[in-house]
Length: 266
Ligand SMILES: NC(=O)c1ccc[n+]([C@@H]2O[C@H](COP(=O)([O-])OP(=O)(O)OC[C@H]3O[C@@H](n4cnc5c(N)ncnc54)[C@H](O)[C@@H]3O)[C@@H](O)[C@H]2O)c1
Image 1 (tube, rainbow, N blue to C red):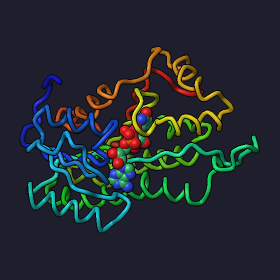
Image 2: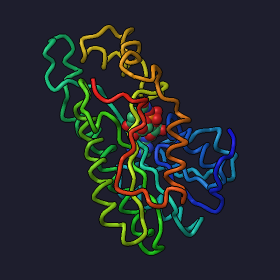
Image 3: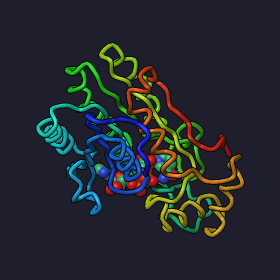
């Protein structure tokens, strides 16, 4: 992976950095010179021997765990330049199982709490803990991972979409609160991408059911609705985030950037 930006001396935290989009962001930030903290429930073994990557076991939905992670970062590096709130979970669910065949794919209270806790409360807890330090520093950037689903809604993903819509609003509000302290808050909204573990076979099966589709046709249907004719690459998302976390994006705040190959709604 080529170096295209100078992030040397920067300390960047990536929640959920062990796999999927987060893993690509960690590698991109690291290859451009940053020290990267991976805050995740589990480590990625390819990061273990890399002295520029610091793994801290962290559950973003748990305040004690988040506060402890931030303390460890400050103890090791003395500052936090950037936080990417990337950790997220999804369970495709219908509000009501009107097909009447798979009650497990109807949104339960437990599903709701699980998604809201990680996607929404986790973003709040991590942002609050990081902002306390960033306010003292009078500098920093928080990037929140939203989704096109959070802007447009998504059949079979109402709860997930709701959490991502909330994230979009946090971005705008926190940017207004933290701007005077020279802290930027920006969102990123990917759409349909190369598969990650989040989009595993079980998730595809659930999503296909909620949409009344054959599970083998979901992804080809997706490709028809993307004007650029292909899913997004994880490195394309990582490059956007790397730029937004850098000082090159020094006047971008309070907005969410859609990265979707021109797909809007379906
Ligand atoms: N994959 C996509 O196409 C897509 C599209 C739009 C938005 N997003 C968003 O991008 C982010 C990353 O998605 P992904 O597809 O790479 O997901 P993924 O499931 O592949 O990876 C998520 C990572 O988050 C970690 N994680 C989960 N719960 C956690 C918790 N409580 N505390 C700490 N870490 C936790 C997991 O261990 C994992 O490493 C998510 O917020 C997702 O909603 C993804």
